[in-house]
Amino acid sequence: MSGEISLPPGKWGVVFEEKGTASDSVYDQRVTVFSGYGAVLGTFKGSSTPNPFKPKDPLIKGKKAYPFVKPGVYPITHGFHKGKHALVVNNDGNVPTTDLNPNFPSQGANARYIRIHWGYSKAWKGSAGCPTIHPLNWNSFLCTLPSGQGFVIIP
Amino acid sequence: MSVLRLVPQKKYFYCLFFCLFYCAQAIAGAIEDEYQKKVSGYNKALSTQEYAQAYKLAEDLLSIDPSDTLSLLRLVFISKMLNKQDARLIEEHMYSVAQSSIQEKELFDLIKAINQSRN
Image: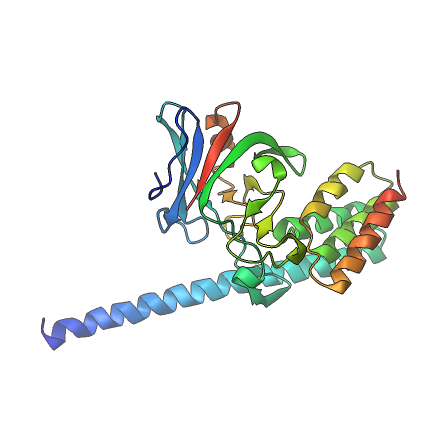
């Protein structure tokens, strides 16, 4: 489990561990899926942070480029992202971010429509704030997920 | 630890540092190049009326950067040319494109107007 944050009892969950826990330069966090009984259903490579910079202007980078989801526990449900199966965080509502959302300053330190989705490629996440799973792990990740509502832990 | 033993360790450290630095630079350069090639490809496909190809490239650009407001304009414009029934997909992209400047907000309003004109 990630630090002192833990999943609500009896609920399945997706836990992103700290950076450097997976052997990949892009998807560098180990992602573990737990059942409601605490059993490990699978481990994958992923990232809870967005692209490192804007590809059209690499000088816009880090937290000036995209919002970073604040560490915490958030509800997730099965849903869609661009018409394909993905996990919807907090029913597409506000998810707190570490700083003012640079792409939607009117939302303050929040981001909406956060989904856990597949990465664009092995070398690029294709995320504007969403947690991503390594594209080669995506299908097996989906297969391990229990049904109903779960929770995600962001470190 | 003797100086003789430290020297090779330092060497390895610098080698590792430069390897990581150049790998990071290579990845950064690769995605910028890919992005620019897709933008050029889109413009070329548009000018030669290869609209299905242009649509695919606009989708790719949004997959690389879902906050790219201009690429959503690229997508909705081609979608209208192709008379595609994808208004809901365009709406979903509208949730993620940036609205942080006057220019982006104006682009967003234009995207919204083009999308609504198809309903």
